[in-house]
Length: 95
Image (cartoon, rainbow, N blue to C red; front, top):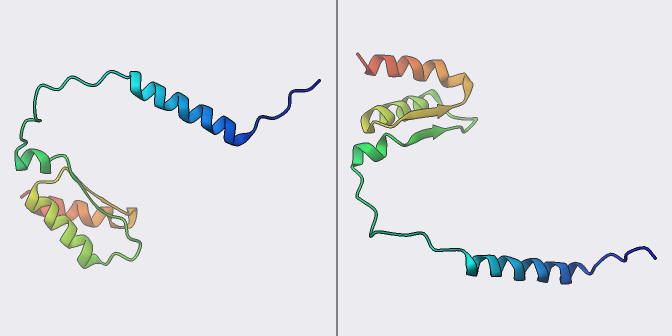
């Protein structure tokens, strides 16, 4: 006799029960206290400043690049149409 498909709600209940069991038995990560504070410049160096809006104007892109330089962000992320503009802005700021 072919196997009958199981009830979806029963299967969901079994999956939920198994997930809860795994979460209960998972060891907690060892913490030695609160995380160390991070310097503002260190945090800024981890940020990718992004403007991917299709209707972004040149003024918006220029402002994005100026903010990235001002705050020391790691990079700017823009649509390919604006990459050359940002590269030129970065080159001007690095002089």
